[in-house]
Image (cartoon, rainbow, N blue to C red; front, side):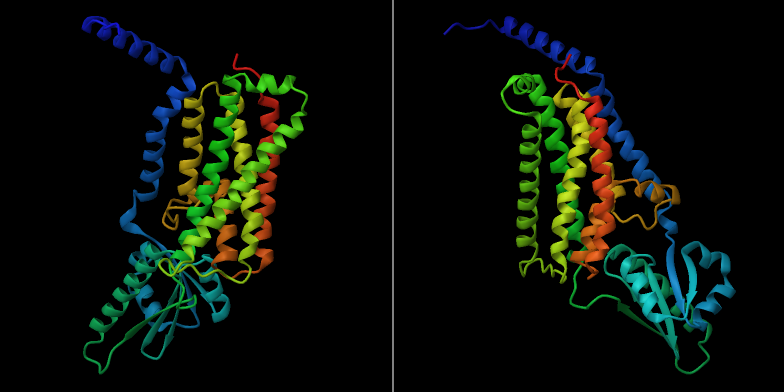
Length: 363
């Protein structure tokens, strides 16, 4: 075996390193998006948590709650910083609003007892709700120290008491897995096929383009169903304790439509990128922030209003909420239809754009 001199190997290493560096710098898409990822997360988390000490919860006052009214009258500015209060006389509708996540709590007063209804869907918010009302009750007790008795706080979750946080965590994690698999699979595969000239060979082969597309889409849908099956099989074990609602099977069409939507996003990325590194970086920039903005990882209850508005443009939001409604919240079949429609619409739009931007060759 011929031995390479030490200085010769060092020279080769420097030359190879320089060539790789130049190749990376010339790949503008990979360069820009690799640097953009940490900046994007700085903006995202900085916006969400910049006012972490001033969390504001949405509360429904059911009937007349004298204790809450007194606290609001005594210190309106202070209470207004931590709580937005709406009024209702319908307890059932108020509990339903909390269960769906439209409001954070519903409160009613029964004599000297303050009853707070909260949701376990978001453990952070539930903890803040109980802390805020515990403080209100303690202050009321201190102000009425000369009176006999005192006030009591009773907290009740709006869901079945046997439900656990896994009911809401599981759909979020599954949604992120489906989104990542669809987007990364499509973008990286397309770039790889283009780089290896496989796309050109497929175009010249005696097989229709439609057959190639259907084969790739079919494989992605099958993999998504396998992900769903494995995920549910593990999550429903006694260790994790996931309990599926009666109409949980509606998660299947939601998953399929979500797969199509994120595949179309991956196809769009793969249509204009020229390297797998660039495709990976750009897909990361799309999927990772979307996982947080879509509610898969972190609730946006205390995010700025503009950030909440942006989240409605995120496909992952509809994939996650669609599955949560039918898997955890016990909503009927119809609750998943809006998510299915939105995901299919997004898939159609991104696919049309991808077709217009598609290139057979890297050059």
